[in-house]
Length: 312
Image 1 (tube, rainbow, N blue to C red):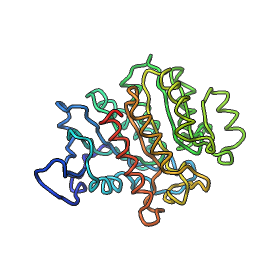
Image 2 (image 1 turned 30 degrees about the horizontal axis):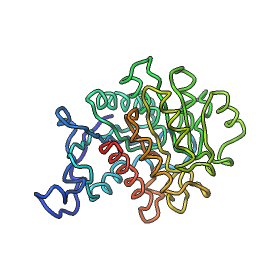
Image 3 (image 1 turned 90 degrees about the vertical axis):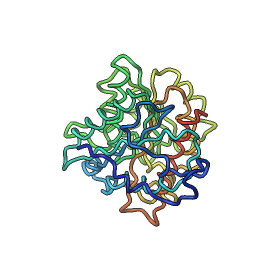
């Protein structure tokens, strides 16, 4: 189910009503209906869903994240010049109808990309990624090589014989799409079974372990991967970050990445000319201590928006 955004959420401190250099997110955000004549636009869209997490036997609550992230973004300073930032609304999963919600997200995303905008998707569980992929495929066409860059503690390559979940998306895609490629940074050695490591090798997945994931070590292999693709999407599962910094996730990582490492990766990948879109998943407000994970998630969304706008 698709619903328009409640722009009452976009409120915050106002230092000036006229000086654009003082503006914050809530002063520049506009409805996506005004997207037509924008210059270098970025469009936000929410995905209210944690049905995939439920199926994966995780802790529920991620469906509440999109509006909580919007609230945190609202008061952040706008630092990207032209005020071409839009909110396209939210796709909400009804009951257990995950597949229908993913299809709807894909349709909405394809429309955003067709309009010439970059896109930032605020999930939701990591099942958000499959809808993200569907939108990219519809927009890019069946022959385009899609590069999926994932920052995650887990491969998400589980079997889906019974039903898809938040742990199956990449296998679903790689099984059926010969023009999709997968690169994942931040893999936890003891967060994935030996079977999943073997499956990653069989499916030709490029991966970097948590202890070797750093901006300087990732730059060359990431650049080579992205150059081999026609279009790139970036997805971030917040459980890749150390639990001390991101406690509000379904599956916390004791030995996770530092937020500054993730920030550097987002800046690098989103600045690449082939990257069209970014999704952030697995922020769970119900499990968040002091709102730390929501604030961090909003900061990562801001980093993606700024990289898209500035083209660093």
